[in-house]
Image 1 (spheres, helix red, strand yellow):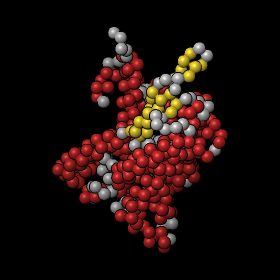
Image 2: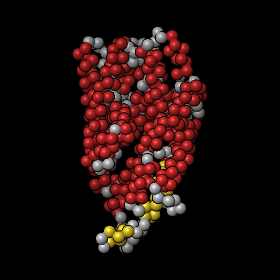
Image 3: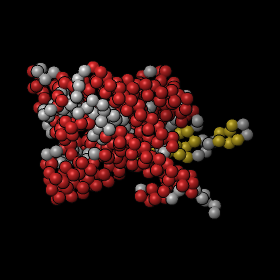
Image 4: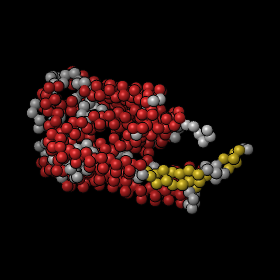
Length: 431
């Protein structure tokens, strides 16, 4: 990885792209620390650490905002509205025929779906910003924290609307910054911004562990964390390659086909999406207990909603496995892949084209998704189980969604840089 970055900095045009990407990241982090108008920054700075320990509702959102959410900054919503909108559009593509037709139209259809994603992002940002600011004005955002009801200087309608507009505008700027990185940087702008927000909280988490547990525990956390990261890299790179042979065919006077390729099926085909789905679903009961604290049956189930509770971890693990199979089933269609192979004269050696090929792909996909789903569940449970002795699971950075994001985006960015280096330094087989 370091070699690829060093070679990229020695290439003038790639160096410009990397420096431009770093500049956008700096702007992004400045916006994440810039408070919204009408917010009492003194109260927030004194209660942010306590709020992270007591508010499980916004744990995932605060992860994607790099700690900006509990500061009510300009970029407080982070990249979460765009992620949610992208997932919703991806799911609707399977349900709505119009979106499915757009997906098959190539670049023009993709551009149209991207436009729909932007509109949906703004709508979700308005809903999230309104809810967060409303809870902040009533003191429910930072529960059990002294002075939480004094987060806003004024609680009139004008102040609330102003903060909502600023947060929604910040989400729009984040989308623009991500597209700038994609067009003029090293690519995958949104992924890089997510990576930036996740990594931004690592220094504070490391320092918290060092201060509370001492140097020995801190060193052990680093060693175990590096081992976890190596294991995640190994699984993320693992794939099953299905060989595909294309028969020769005449088109006019030219001979086409006769080549061999493969279909790469990753062990973790679903990525981080199942963890996000499961976390969001389990946060709904927590939200209900905060909105209706006097309801008796909600008070009875509140102890089971704590991350350290065994029932909570078991349900979380089952949800991740379910959503892993669900997401893979809607994003990879074996019948469609088999039909496309048959259309262009492709076949899997030893498997008949058509329905037998689709059944074989479904069989292989199910077998490799099973260990992938178990892997996701175990990684997501690491902060809750393996390091329960730390008594501060929110401070452990090597687990859950954070490590999956860091490894996934890091590997993808390095591949992007190496591919651009190969385009500029390819010498071919003949010298």
